[in-house]
Structure formats: C-alpha cells, structure tokens
Amino acid sequence: MFKVLVSDPISDLGISLLTEAPDVSIDKKPGLSEDELVAIIGEYDALLVRSQTRVTERIMSAGKRLKVIGRAGVGVDNIDLEAATRSGIIVINAPDGNTITTCEHTFAMMMALARHIPQAYQKTVSGVWDRKSFVGVELRNKVLGVLGMGRIGSEVAARAKAFGMTVYGYDPFLTEERAEKLGVRLATVDEILKDADFITVHTPLTPETRHMIGKEQFAKIKPGVRIINCARGGIIDEKALVEAIDAGIVAGAAFDVFEEEPPAPDHPFLNHPKIIVTPHLGASTVEAQENVAVDVSEQLLHILRGEPFKNAVNMPPVPADVRAKLEPYFALGKKLGSFAAQFSEGPVKEISITYAGDLANVDTAPLTRYVVEGVLAHHLGADVVNVVNAMHFAKTRSLNITVSSTQATKGFTNSISVTIRTSKEERLVAGALLNGFGARITQIDKYPVDVETEGHLLLISHHDKPGIIGRVGTLLGNNDINIATMKVGRKVIGGDAIMVLGVDKAVPKEVLGQLVALPELDSAKEIYLG
Image (tube, rainbow, N blue to C red; front, side, top):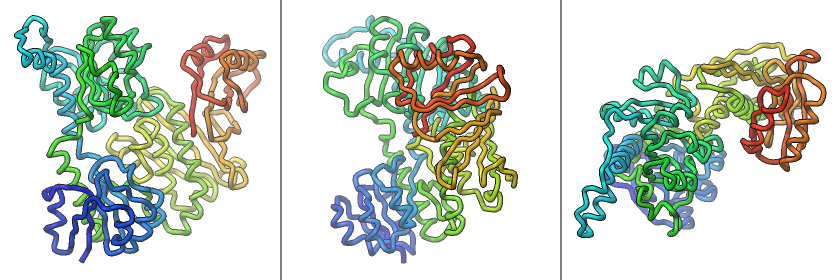
C-alpha cells in the first residue's frame, strides 16, 4: 500500500484518482510547519502540494520512503529541485492545466477592453446612464497580433479566428508550416506592431522578452491599438505604455499581471480610465484548479506503480558510470545551446549536435538534454524549461534534433558542436574542456576562437582592417563599458573576421546600434552566459 500525504488544500475531486485507488492510502494534513512535516514525512511514499508548503532539503532528507513530490500547478519554486535530485526524488507538475482558463481570461479581457465593460458598469451602478461615452469596437475584421504561439497563444489564435479576426503570430519557434496548420500568418514583431488592432502577449518573461514592447516599439505601433497582457508582468514596459495611452497612440490596455505584484497603491494602471486590471486571475477557475490536481494525481500514480510518466521537472536517474563521464560537460553543453540560440536569427527548425572524441563511445542522451535546454530556455524561460522537460518542449514545437558522433577531435580530447538551423540561416558553435575543467568556446561558425563561457559577451562581425579594434574600444569606453577580455577569429588576412569581447555589464541596444554604424563593421550582438 502506497501512502500519500497532501499538505496543502486541494479539492476532493482533484485527488479522486488517489482516494479511489485500491493501492493508495491518502492523508490530508494542510498547514503543517516544517518541523511537523519532518516528524511524519518518513511514513509516506509521495507528497502532494500546491504553493503554500515549502519542500526543503530537510523535509526530503527525513522522507526515507519518498519517491515523488507532486506540485498541483505550473511553478515549482517552493520545492528544492537540486535537493530532490540528489535524494533521487522525482518532482512533477501540471504544465498544461491552466491553458484554457488563461486563454479564456485573455478573451474576457479583450472583450471588456473593446466594449469598455468595467468602466460602463461602474458608471451605471453609480447612477449615471451614459451610453455616448462608451462606444466600442468590434473584433470582427480586426487584426490580432499574438506574441508567443505556445499552448496558450495557439488557443487564443483559434478563438480569435472564430470571432472573424485575422491573426498574426510571432514565436521564435513558429515555422511557416506550423503557422499554416494553425491558420495564422507568420509575422515579425515589427509587422505585428505595424498592422495589429489588438496585441496579446503569451511569452515567458526572459531577458530577451523583458520590455519587448517599450518606448521604441510604441513609437512605430499602429495608432489606436489595444494591448492585453495575461502572461507575465514586465513583457510590456508599464511606464512607456501609460505614456503611449496618454499621447493617444494606444487606445487602451487590459492587464492581469504586473511587474511587481501586488502593485503599489499609486500604480498608474489602477486609476487610469483606459486601462482594465485584474489581480492575476489567469489560472483562477474551478476547472483549472481541479485539472492541475487531476493531472498530477495521475502521474503520481504512474510513478508509484513503476509505469511510464511525464511532466517531471528534475533530472532523471543516470547510471553512475555514465554520469561520471558526462557530468563535467553538462554546463558546457547548456551554455553552447544558449550561445547558439542567442547567436541565430529566425524561428528555430533544427538542432544538430556532434560529439567528438571519447564522448562518441558514451550514451550522450543526458548531455543532449542539457544542450536542448540551453537553446529552449533562452526563448521560453529558465523557469519553464529544464533538463527533463526540454525534449518534450522540443517535440511540441516540431523541433528536429539530430545527434551524431565522430572520433576526430581537432586537437581536443572531447568536443561538442551545436548547429542551429532556422528559417533564415545556419549557425555553429563548438566547445571543449581545457585540461578537463575549463569550459571554452573553440569555434564560432568557421572561425577558431578561445572564449570563456561566462558573463556578458559582445560578438562582433567585421572586415579585417586596421583600426577597427581601436574604434570599438573607444566607443565602448565612451559609453562606460569596460572590456575584460578580447578574442579574435579570422580565416585570411583582410577578409571577414569576428571579435568576441568579454565586458563587465550589459550593452544597451543603442550602443549596439552605434557599433553597427562603425565603418567595416557588419553586426554586433550581446550574448549572456551567466
């Protein structure tokens, strides 16, 4: 008989699979302190939580029988994943449970925004019958721009089509083929800004997506656009949005999320007549709360019974001998994937990984997960993608992954090369461990280099002419950006070349623009490797 402890409030319907299972005994004890959990957790095979219980290393160390921890929700920030992995405890969540409810909330916000429903309600119940102030717009024949075409964005697009809207979709993994299947027009962010009457965002919050719609974008956005954010606070620059609304550029906005939650009492959204707000209700439906509990209960049963399962969010077991050989390369693989993702332009279609040297004789599947995690985490967020679910996310986005091996190492004991093919281009980055420890990038496209895999890097493509390095250094110095390291790569004197600069802080977009404007310089990209 398997014993399961439920330590947070979860509906009986949500855990009915567990309560009705003949081989499971379930105890519901919400509100326990850490000490109380430590005292009893040794009796249980599984722990089921929501967001209140903080599952610490101390609790897991006391859970001698504990095989699995289930989180009835999406996030797992209240669970120490590293400690769970060290203890051999599987952690699972329910990533799909809030898809429909968040999609429907997005449409509720869109309709309320189009027809001024909250403002009209407030004025009507205050005793004022005012029809003239609240003339709205129809959704039919309007262009909806969807930034982020994952699960939720795709559901929003399907419903928008039913309303007679034309849908433009942007996503770093959206290809022409998938866009056609979804019935949306594949578009760039700039095309959406130019043509959309409504814009809704459904991307994770990453360094790349933070303020992806800001002052620069509002300067070229279609006048009269309406904006909805039910994804993450910070994707849209709140201050710039208020300024755009007050300037008459944006007709209105509807936000379920804020950069800081809860927002301060004097937040400009809270009393603005053209902005609708809700307190992060995207996943707050009875059905969603039950769905996540049902999903996790089902997977928890599979794990306890030794059956195939999904939605694990920590590292699966790897044989000790294989792990000993691969573990030194995990961080390198992840950083090569991240570098390749930041380096390339256009929707990613394929990731090709080549292992050289002794790695060719090892089962590199665990290492491949780290490479794919590095690629996807850059676009989808490190809080969303991890080493376990990376392959699942790749599959759901029709991302082709190929792996090959060779004995040829080009001077290194072992090496890893990652090639990303997008709808626009093909890019390669390779790396190795120097003396078995120091991770290095050894090749970028056709250029041999020796670059450390950490911090802020500035990758510059240029023509190999005298004076370019000096002009770049002067420009960065004038912008208070210190150069810590510099590596150059070229094939022939006077031909195309690259330089990779390690700098002490992030390089603003305007400085990147100034660099590109320099003579003989083709491109400049900032790459951050943590």
